[in-house]
Image 1 (cartoon, rainbow, N blue to C red):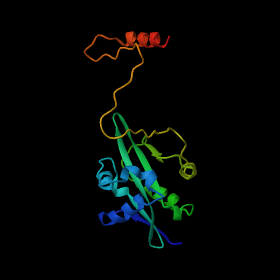
Image 2: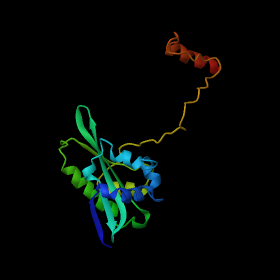
Image 3: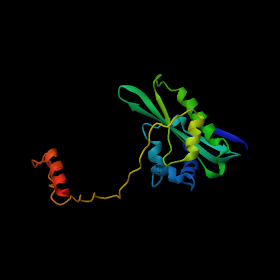
Image 4: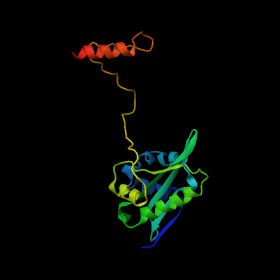
Length: 185
């Protein structure tokens, strides 16, 4: 197995698109999907595009790694790393090699000593957890994927006896809580 990793270039757009839309990576990279989804991500101002890496095994696209540098007011930035490896090339060291390339890139950035570096997986992923542990990362937080259908929000349904009120009506939070408790009795 001949593994090579190199920085992404604009000429690699369709290679990267094929990776993120492939059946083994699409569920974990859904924000890269759809019309211009990948282009949108590539123009994200927090994407550290010079650090975007592509991995090839025997010349075949096998995965990619992407770093985001997220500014934080009054603190050093947070760096978020994501690695995606196609099913065929998992458990062969491709993800580890990509992660090492991303970490080497991050070390070249003027982030300050207190910068937080994190890895992420969009869906629960034992392989990603194992890779993170292998690299010395420890679990810190969960991110939740919440969604609702496009279009207007549904009207809320209030329990009987609870006044809905608006910002212009004199219903205080205390009276709403009291009304809710009264409605449940």
